[in-house]
Length: 270
Figure: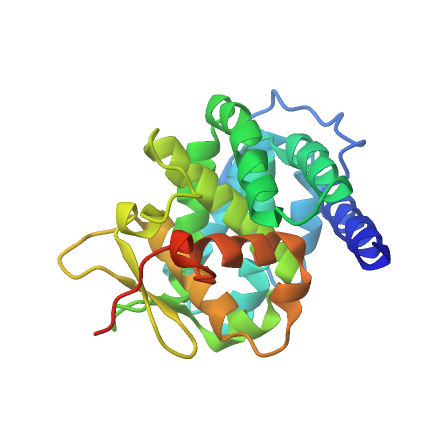
């Protein structure tokens, strides 16, 4: 119980530090010209802080970042710095920060043996707000940003090592919440506790050590699903234990890639 309490405080404080939900008086009705936003690796964190409580600004910063990654020669190390903030921008752009904090606090406060079920319930609780506040577009923008660091030519989407090494478990949690909600918004019948989830998204779990999530041959998964696959492969191949220690990424792993019991999902060998 002590470990769970420590994790609860840590994750909630992580969300609070990234999203100051009590300082949300910025003028959300303003419009911004993303072309006037000059992002650098030195100021990206300041820009992200300025988006708190201001979805229009978050969307403008996201557009500026996407343009930068598309049209400038960015090194993998610089890309990793920019992408660390992509999920936070998506959360602010969809105005979901406070809702995620509330649901995360409730989940962590009562977390028990059904960690995966609690996480699934949290996504269900967030879905209506996500859909109503433009979350689907935020997920699409996030997937487009992340795609600049994903190599999926082999059929197994993977992040560039520079980003995979730098991203934290909390940042992966934020991104996966947005991406999974985005997929659920695209398919009303998608239930992340259903073993057929990956196939529904055009993905397949392949047995091995570590297990891999691949794109199903002749399928064309969305950029959103490809980003989910890249994160799952990052979690599955991790040797540091950072994702196992985080209740959110642990729940995601249990649901989609752990295979603990037949009900967790089907596997195929090449």
